[in-house]
Length: 253
Image (tube, rainbow, N blue to C red; front, side):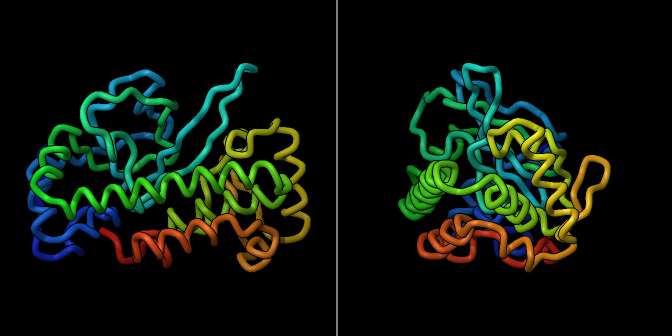
């Protein structure tokens, strides 16, 4: 379905902060090519080696994730992408294969834009090229931080970090995250994740629901997390001020 919202007011655009960050003239270049869709959790966007032909912009509480397969058969999630960004073909110029698997983590609305249409718009606007280059820098920063985090922080610190990161992007204290999914985020066995969750429950930090966790004490969870989220948010503010989610999704459409 074609989608051509008003280009005059950023708040009338799809609820993706990267799209809303575009200048009016730049957004007008891509608006006729935007397609809205609803994708379910678990939907596969790309496998390694696939031709990246479409950029996906998560909107509102939707999330996408990058997964790397390991020789033991386990997948490890490296970073989550929410309404602050996009996945697939962000800075490519022509054919580039996907390196990792990219899936929908939390289902919901997404905006699709063919890479060819984005590249044509970039050729017309240096400012648009610069915007996506700066966003790519933020993705690299997330990857660097994730690598360091996995090397030096405890499972408890990283579990708290991932839950907080998910809360920030979805704007909800109820996080649709199973023990198995959290284990994939952490790159550990499910038994380790279950023990951490049980500790958090015993301390009154969170409760578990069927297929989800409910955060009861945000400050306590923040105190148990490493500072990796804060480092990433700080870099986003330096490079793309106002793009990283800050105060939930109550202002979205």
